[in-house]
Image (tube, rainbow, N blue to C red; front, side, top):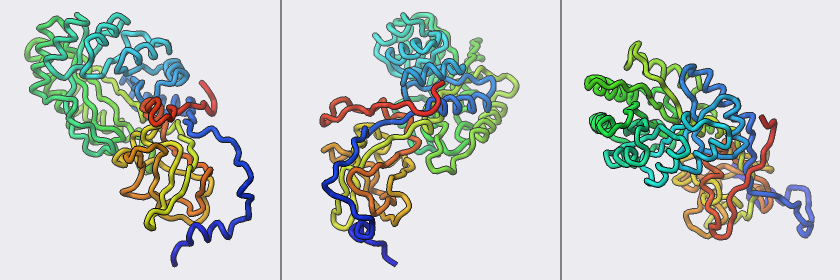
Length: 388
Protein backbone atom coordinates (compact mmCIF):
# COMPACT_ATOMS: atom_id res chain seq x y z
CA UNK A 1 0.00 0.00 0.00
CA UNK A 2 1.44 3.36 -1.03
CA UNK A 3 1.81 6.21 1.42
CA UNK A 4 -0.62 9.11 1.00
CA UNK A 5 0.64 12.28 -0.59
CA UNK A 6 1.16 15.34 1.54
CA UNK A 7 -1.88 16.92 -0.17
CA UNK A 8 -4.06 13.94 0.84
CA UNK A 9 -2.84 14.15 4.42
CA UNK A 10 -3.67 17.85 4.67
CA UNK A 11 -7.04 17.33 2.98
CA UNK A 12 -8.02 14.83 5.66
CA UNK A 13 -6.89 17.06 8.51
CA UNK A 14 -9.07 19.57 10.33
CA UNK A 15 -9.52 22.75 8.28
CA UNK A 16 -7.43 25.73 9.28
CA UNK A 17 -7.46 29.36 8.33
CA UNK A 18 -4.44 29.88 6.05
CA UNK A 19 -4.54 33.62 6.73
CA UNK A 20 -4.39 33.23 10.51
CA UNK A 21 -1.06 34.39 11.96
CA UNK A 22 1.16 31.66 13.33
CA UNK A 23 2.35 32.02 16.91
CA UNK A 24 5.68 33.77 17.33
CA UNK A 25 8.46 31.24 17.82
CA UNK A 26 11.99 31.67 19.08
CA UNK A 27 13.63 29.09 16.90
CA UNK A 28 16.20 27.94 16.35
CA UNK A 29 17.53 27.50 19.87
CA UNK A 30 19.31 24.96 22.02
CA UNK A 31 17.45 23.83 25.11
CA UNK A 32 20.12 22.81 27.61
CA UNK A 33 19.43 20.74 30.73
CA UNK A 34 22.42 21.43 32.98
CA UNK A 35 21.20 18.99 35.63
CA UNK A 36 21.25 16.17 33.06
CA UNK A 37 24.83 17.06 32.08
CA UNK A 38 25.95 16.96 35.71
CA UNK A 39 24.27 13.57 36.03
CA UNK A 40 26.20 12.28 33.03
CA UNK A 41 29.45 13.53 34.58
CA UNK A 42 28.65 11.76 37.84
CA UNK A 43 27.93 8.52 36.00
CA UNK A 44 31.32 8.63 34.28
CA UNK A 45 33.13 9.56 37.49
CA UNK A 46 31.45 6.72 39.38
CA UNK A 47 32.24 4.21 36.62
CA UNK A 48 35.94 5.13 36.56
CA UNK A 49 36.92 5.89 40.17
CA UNK A 50 40.40 7.32 40.45
CA UNK A 51 40.35 8.63 36.87
CA UNK A 52 40.11 12.41 36.56
CA UNK A 53 37.14 13.55 34.46
CA UNK A 54 38.06 16.67 32.48
CA UNK A 55 35.08 18.00 30.55
CA UNK A 56 36.03 19.20 27.06
CA UNK A 57 35.02 22.85 27.19
CA UNK A 58 34.88 23.03 23.38
CA UNK A 59 31.81 20.76 23.38
CA UNK A 60 29.64 23.43 25.00
CA UNK A 61 31.16 26.35 26.93
CA UNK A 62 27.97 27.73 28.51
CA UNK A 63 29.06 29.41 31.75
CA UNK A 64 26.24 27.93 33.86
CA UNK A 65 27.15 24.46 32.60
CA UNK A 66 30.84 24.95 33.41
CA UNK A 67 30.11 26.34 36.86
CA UNK A 68 27.73 23.48 37.67
CA UNK A 69 30.20 20.85 36.49
CA UNK A 70 32.98 22.42 38.55
CA UNK A 71 30.79 22.47 41.64
CA UNK A 72 30.09 18.76 41.08
CA UNK A 73 33.83 17.99 41.07
CA UNK A 74 34.54 17.98 37.35
CA UNK A 75 37.79 19.30 35.89
CA UNK A 76 38.36 20.72 32.41
CA UNK A 77 40.11 20.08 29.12
CA UNK A 78 40.82 23.31 27.24
CA UNK A 79 42.09 24.13 23.76
CA UNK A 80 42.50 27.93 23.70
CA UNK A 81 43.12 30.85 26.05
CA UNK A 82 39.41 31.71 25.81
CA UNK A 83 38.54 28.25 27.13
CA UNK A 84 41.16 28.61 29.88
CA UNK A 85 39.47 31.84 30.99
CA UNK A 86 36.03 30.24 30.82
CA UNK A 87 37.19 27.37 33.05
CA UNK A 88 38.81 29.74 35.52
CA UNK A 89 35.66 31.88 35.60
CA UNK A 90 33.74 28.71 36.51
CA UNK A 91 36.00 28.27 39.54
CA UNK A 92 38.65 25.86 38.24
CA UNK A 93 42.25 26.08 39.37
CA UNK A 94 44.70 26.54 36.46
CA UNK A 95 46.96 23.69 37.55
CA UNK A 96 44.06 21.26 37.08
CA UNK A 97 43.55 22.15 33.40
CA UNK A 98 44.78 20.07 30.47
CA UNK A 99 45.58 22.15 27.39
CA UNK A 100 44.94 19.44 24.83
CA UNK A 101 45.38 21.25 21.50
CA UNK A 102 48.56 19.67 20.06
CA UNK A 103 49.39 22.59 17.73
CA UNK A 104 49.14 26.03 19.30
CA UNK A 105 50.08 29.61 18.54
CA UNK A 106 53.12 30.62 20.52
CA UNK A 107 51.23 33.60 21.93
CA UNK A 108 48.46 31.27 23.14
CA UNK A 109 50.96 29.14 25.04
CA UNK A 110 52.42 32.25 26.64
CA UNK A 111 48.97 33.48 27.64
CA UNK A 112 47.85 30.12 29.02
CA UNK A 113 51.05 29.74 31.03
CA UNK A 114 50.63 33.27 32.40
CA UNK A 115 47.17 32.22 33.56
CA UNK A 116 48.71 29.28 35.43
CA UNK A 117 48.27 26.37 33.00
CA UNK A 118 51.15 23.92 33.37
CA UNK A 119 50.12 20.82 31.36
CA UNK A 120 50.20 20.90 27.55
CA UNK A 121 49.76 18.29 24.81
CA UNK A 122 52.29 18.16 21.96
CA UNK A 123 52.81 15.90 18.97
CA UNK A 124 55.93 17.18 17.20
CA UNK A 125 59.47 18.26 18.01
CA UNK A 126 58.60 21.77 16.80
CA UNK A 127 55.69 22.08 19.23
CA UNK A 128 57.81 20.68 22.06
CA UNK A 129 60.48 23.31 21.51
CA UNK A 130 57.80 25.99 21.33
CA UNK A 131 56.32 24.94 24.68
CA UNK A 132 59.81 24.81 26.23
CA UNK A 133 60.41 28.40 25.10
CA UNK A 134 56.94 29.82 25.84
CA UNK A 135 56.15 27.90 29.04
CA UNK A 136 59.49 26.64 30.46
CA UNK A 137 59.29 23.91 33.06
CA UNK A 138 55.79 22.80 32.02
CA UNK A 139 54.60 19.21 31.85
CA UNK A 140 53.79 17.74 28.46
CA UNK A 141 51.86 14.78 27.10
CA UNK A 142 52.61 13.45 23.63
CA UNK A 143 49.57 12.51 21.56
CA UNK A 144 49.52 9.14 19.83
CA UNK A 145 47.70 8.61 16.54
CA UNK A 146 44.72 6.20 16.52
CA UNK A 147 42.63 4.67 13.75
CA UNK A 148 39.29 5.97 15.04
CA UNK A 149 37.71 2.66 14.02
CA UNK A 150 34.33 2.15 15.64
CA UNK A 151 33.51 5.86 15.94
CA UNK A 152 30.91 7.89 14.07
CA UNK A 153 33.36 10.78 13.67
CA UNK A 154 36.87 9.28 13.24
CA UNK A 155 39.63 11.79 13.84
CA UNK A 156 41.99 12.33 10.92
CA UNK A 157 45.75 12.12 10.95
CA UNK A 158 45.82 15.85 11.63
CA UNK A 159 47.09 15.00 15.11
CA UNK A 160 49.07 12.19 16.66
CA UNK A 161 52.33 10.29 16.16
CA UNK A 162 53.63 6.73 16.35
CA UNK A 163 55.00 5.21 19.56
CA UNK A 164 58.59 5.59 18.32
CA UNK A 165 58.02 9.25 17.49
CA UNK A 166 56.32 9.83 20.84
CA UNK A 167 59.31 8.39 22.68
CA UNK A 168 61.69 10.69 20.79
CA UNK A 169 59.47 13.72 21.44
CA UNK A 170 59.23 13.05 25.16
CA UNK A 171 62.99 12.47 25.41
CA UNK A 172 63.44 15.83 23.69
CA UNK A 173 61.03 17.37 26.20
CA UNK A 174 63.16 16.12 29.08
CA UNK A 175 66.30 17.46 27.39
CA UNK A 176 64.64 20.88 27.08
CA UNK A 177 63.76 21.03 30.77
CA UNK A 178 60.13 20.01 30.45
CA UNK A 179 58.44 17.28 32.46
CA UNK A 180 57.68 14.35 30.08
CA UNK A 181 54.50 13.50 31.94
CA UNK A 182 53.19 10.84 29.59
CA UNK A 183 50.88 10.15 26.70
CA UNK A 184 47.48 11.17 25.36
CA UNK A 185 45.24 9.82 22.59
CA UNK A 186 41.67 10.03 21.30
CA UNK A 187 39.76 7.03 19.91
CA UNK A 188 37.30 9.07 17.82
CA UNK A 189 34.09 10.90 18.62
CA UNK A 190 30.90 8.92 19.35
CA UNK A 191 32.96 5.75 19.77
CA UNK A 192 30.65 2.72 19.77
CA UNK A 193 33.26 0.07 20.58
CA UNK A 194 34.37 -0.11 24.24
CA UNK A 195 37.34 -2.20 23.06
CA UNK A 196 38.71 0.73 21.05
CA UNK A 197 40.89 1.81 23.98
CA UNK A 198 42.88 -1.45 24.15
CA UNK A 199 45.30 -0.80 21.28
CA UNK A 200 46.25 2.80 22.20
CA UNK A 201 46.57 1.86 25.88
CA UNK A 202 49.01 -0.88 24.90
CA UNK A 203 50.92 1.59 22.71
CA UNK A 204 51.04 4.05 25.61
CA UNK A 205 52.51 1.37 27.86
CA UNK A 206 55.31 0.83 25.36
CA UNK A 207 56.11 4.54 25.42
CA UNK A 208 56.11 4.54 29.23
CA UNK A 209 58.48 1.56 29.25
CA UNK A 210 60.78 3.28 26.80
CA UNK A 211 60.94 6.41 28.94
CA UNK A 212 61.63 4.39 32.07
CA UNK A 213 64.51 2.67 30.30
CA UNK A 214 66.09 6.11 30.06
CA UNK A 215 65.56 6.73 33.76
CA UNK A 216 62.51 8.96 33.35
CA UNK A 217 59.32 8.64 35.36
CA UNK A 218 56.19 9.30 33.26
CA UNK A 219 53.11 9.52 35.45
CA UNK A 220 50.01 10.50 33.46
CA UNK A 221 47.93 8.80 30.75
CA UNK A 222 45.21 10.87 29.04
CA UNK A 223 42.63 8.40 27.70
CA UNK A 224 40.86 11.12 25.71
CA UNK A 225 37.17 11.37 24.88
CA UNK A 226 34.93 9.36 22.60
CA UNK A 227 32.23 8.42 25.11
CA UNK A 228 28.98 8.54 23.15
CA UNK A 229 25.57 10.10 23.52
CA UNK A 230 22.66 7.72 23.00
CA UNK A 231 21.83 8.77 19.45
CA UNK A 232 20.49 5.42 18.27
CA UNK A 233 19.70 4.01 21.71
CA UNK A 234 21.80 0.90 21.19
CA UNK A 235 25.12 2.36 22.33
CA UNK A 236 26.91 0.37 25.07
CA UNK A 237 26.42 1.47 28.66
CA UNK A 238 28.96 3.60 30.51
CA UNK A 239 29.82 0.57 32.65
CA UNK A 240 30.87 -1.35 29.52
CA UNK A 241 33.35 1.36 28.56
CA UNK A 242 34.72 1.58 32.09
CA UNK A 243 35.16 -2.19 32.32
CA UNK A 244 36.96 -2.35 28.95
CA UNK A 245 39.27 0.53 29.90
CA UNK A 246 40.16 -1.03 33.26
CA UNK A 247 40.85 -4.36 31.54
CA UNK A 248 43.11 -2.66 28.97
CA UNK A 249 45.03 -0.79 31.67
CA UNK A 250 45.65 -3.94 33.73
CA UNK A 251 46.69 -5.93 30.65
CA UNK A 252 49.21 -3.31 29.51
CA UNK A 253 50.48 -1.77 32.76
CA UNK A 254 49.94 -4.54 35.29
CA UNK A 255 50.06 -3.20 38.81
CA UNK A 256 52.21 -0.20 37.84
CA UNK A 257 49.29 1.96 36.74
CA UNK A 258 49.85 5.64 35.92
CA UNK A 259 47.43 8.37 36.86
CA UNK A 260 44.65 8.51 34.29
CA UNK A 261 42.20 11.09 33.02
CA UNK A 262 39.48 11.26 30.40
CA UNK A 263 38.22 14.20 28.31
CA UNK A 264 34.52 13.61 27.62
CA UNK A 265 32.54 16.25 25.76
CA UNK A 266 29.59 14.64 24.00
CA UNK A 267 29.45 11.96 26.70
CA UNK A 268 28.58 14.64 29.27
CA UNK A 269 26.57 17.28 27.43
CA UNK A 270 25.28 15.54 24.29
CA UNK A 271 22.06 14.11 25.72
CA UNK A 272 21.51 17.25 27.81
CA UNK A 273 20.67 19.39 24.79
CA UNK A 274 17.87 19.56 22.22
CA UNK A 275 17.96 21.86 19.21
CA UNK A 276 14.47 23.25 18.61
CA UNK A 277 13.96 24.34 15.02
CA UNK A 278 11.06 25.22 12.74
CA UNK A 279 10.17 24.17 9.23
CA UNK A 280 10.85 26.97 6.75
CA UNK A 281 9.32 25.13 3.80
CA UNK A 282 8.59 21.67 2.43
CA UNK A 283 9.37 21.38 -1.27
CA UNK A 284 8.99 18.57 -3.83
CA UNK A 285 12.06 18.28 -6.05
CA UNK A 286 11.69 15.62 -8.70
CA UNK A 287 9.63 13.38 -6.48
CA UNK A 288 11.87 13.87 -3.45
CA UNK A 289 10.46 15.73 -0.45
CA UNK A 290 12.87 18.35 0.92
CA UNK A 291 12.30 19.74 4.41
CA UNK A 292 14.06 23.06 5.00
CA UNK A 293 14.69 24.00 8.64
CA UNK A 294 15.70 27.31 10.20
CA UNK A 295 18.80 25.61 11.68
CA UNK A 296 21.44 23.91 9.58
CA UNK A 297 25.07 22.97 9.11
CA UNK A 298 26.36 26.52 9.54
CA UNK A 299 24.05 27.55 12.35
CA UNK A 300 24.58 24.76 14.87
CA UNK A 301 24.53 21.36 13.20
CA UNK A 302 28.02 21.16 11.72
CA UNK A 303 28.35 17.54 12.82
CA UNK A 304 25.80 16.51 10.21
CA UNK A 305 28.45 17.15 7.54
CA UNK A 306 28.82 13.92 5.58
CA UNK A 307 25.95 12.71 7.77
CA UNK A 308 28.50 11.66 10.40
CA UNK A 309 26.20 12.26 13.35
CA UNK A 310 22.60 11.15 12.89
CA UNK A 311 20.57 12.91 15.54
CA UNK A 312 17.18 11.59 16.68
CA UNK A 313 14.38 13.78 15.30
CA UNK A 314 10.92 14.50 16.73
CA UNK A 315 8.27 16.75 15.21
CA UNK A 316 5.01 18.42 16.18
CA UNK A 317 3.29 16.21 13.56
CA UNK A 318 4.49 12.85 14.88
CA UNK A 319 1.92 10.06 14.85
CA UNK A 320 0.76 10.24 11.25
CA UNK A 321 2.00 8.73 8.00
CA UNK A 322 5.68 9.25 7.25
CA UNK A 323 7.90 9.23 4.20
CA UNK A 324 11.55 9.79 3.24
CA UNK A 325 12.70 13.40 3.37
CA UNK A 326 15.93 15.21 2.62
CA UNK A 327 16.60 17.63 5.48
CA UNK A 328 18.32 20.93 4.70
CA UNK A 329 19.32 24.11 6.50
CA UNK A 330 18.33 27.70 5.77
CA UNK A 331 21.45 29.21 4.22
CA UNK A 332 22.19 29.64 0.52
CA UNK A 333 25.23 27.37 0.69
CA UNK A 334 24.71 24.11 -1.20
CA UNK A 335 26.62 22.27 1.54
CA UNK A 336 23.92 23.21 4.05
CA UNK A 337 22.18 19.83 3.79
CA UNK A 338 21.86 17.73 6.92
CA UNK A 339 20.63 14.41 5.57
CA UNK A 340 20.43 13.47 1.89
CA UNK A 341 22.34 10.24 1.29
CA UNK A 342 20.14 8.55 3.88
CA UNK A 343 16.88 10.56 3.96
CA UNK A 344 14.98 10.73 7.23
CA UNK A 345 11.48 9.33 7.70
CA UNK A 346 9.36 12.34 8.66
CA UNK A 347 5.61 13.01 8.84
CA UNK A 348 4.03 13.75 5.46
CA UNK A 349 1.92 16.40 7.16
CA UNK A 350 4.99 18.43 8.05
CA UNK A 351 4.54 22.01 6.87
CA UNK A 352 5.87 25.54 7.27
CA UNK A 353 6.02 26.61 10.90
CA UNK A 354 5.93 23.11 12.36
CA UNK A 355 8.46 22.29 15.07
CA UNK A 356 11.29 19.79 14.71
CA UNK A 357 13.23 18.81 17.83
CA UNK A 358 16.74 17.45 17.33
CA UNK A 359 17.71 15.42 20.37
CA UNK A 360 21.17 14.61 21.80
CA UNK A 361 22.48 17.87 20.29
CA UNK A 362 23.97 19.48 23.38
CA UNK A 363 27.55 19.06 22.14
CA UNK A 364 29.15 21.13 19.38
CA UNK A 365 25.90 22.86 18.41
CA UNK A 366 26.50 26.32 19.88
CA UNK A 367 30.28 26.55 19.67
CA UNK A 368 30.60 26.01 15.89
CA UNK A 369 27.83 28.39 14.81
CA UNK A 370 29.21 30.91 12.33
CA UNK A 371 28.50 34.52 13.28
CA UNK A 372 26.97 36.35 10.36
CA UNK A 373 26.93 33.46 7.87
CA UNK A 374 24.31 34.59 5.34
CA UNK A 375 23.13 36.94 8.08
CA UNK A 376 22.02 34.12 10.41
CA UNK A 377 22.80 34.46 14.10
CA UNK A 378 24.60 31.79 16.14
CA UNK A 379 22.36 29.32 17.96
CA UNK A 380 21.19 30.78 21.30
CA UNK A 381 20.79 28.68 24.46
CA UNK A 382 17.78 28.40 26.75
CA UNK A 383 18.30 26.66 30.07
CA UNK A 384 15.60 24.15 30.96
CA UNK A 385 14.97 21.84 33.89
CA UNK A 386 16.70 22.18 37.23
CA UNK A 387 19.77 24.42 37.23
CA UNK A 388 22.41 23.08 39.60
